[in-house]
Image 1 (cartoon, rainbow, N blue to C red):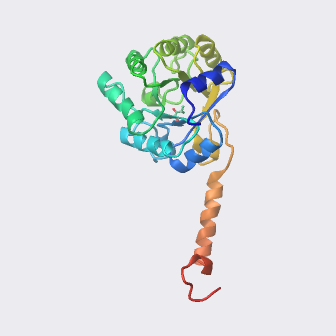
Image 2: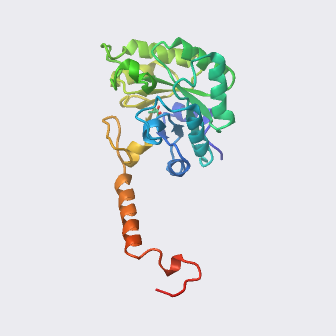
Image 3: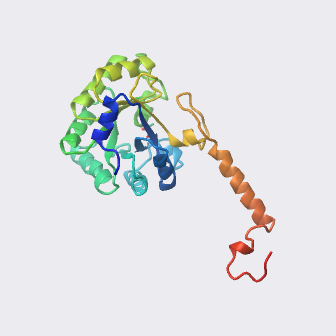
Length: 276
Ligand code: KIV
């Protein structure tokens, strides 16, 4: 059948189906996420703090993002795979941005790329326009954009219109500009529910929320939060499993077995000298 295409996503959107997206950063987790039936897998730059051991997304390199995306691409059969362009892999020049976006599709097998966009972010909007003209599907990302965290000053909810938060109007206009330049979907991160609703009403492409409330066209979460592999929990997320404790229990059992002489047993060795 092949992976979900933009027309497939659009059909679901037009039929009023709520879209689903999760992140993944490696092959084993991506395989299970795909088998679980999500529409889209985002190989997010959230790999920074959820996969690569950095404090945040800023240090993630293009090479790391491409490597993660390629690992996911090699295993996913059904979901659309979206490569997330890391900090300063776009925006320094149009030429560099296009070349780097191209690497996600040509080298890493992504079906689309995602770019964070600041409110009225002219440079990024121009890049999105050129990418879509060249045939590269683009997902926009507005609201609390972690690549601008140093500028925003922290994890402040956006759309409140106070000193640490842009206005609903700015986010609506930015979403409209992204739609006009050809973005086929827009992620809204950590915005007021009113912002999620207003942006969703303003554009005719699917909006995907993470902490954007209930009036959007789809939802995305970070897989480590969903699986209970994170050290923190977030109001905008929901934990569906506790893999931290599953993994710890398994490791402790292994350590006990080895130390207690219970592993390897005769069935685990080749040409055993004696049977247990
Ligand atoms: O990098 C990421 O995982 C993201 C999502 C939080 C939308 O951008």
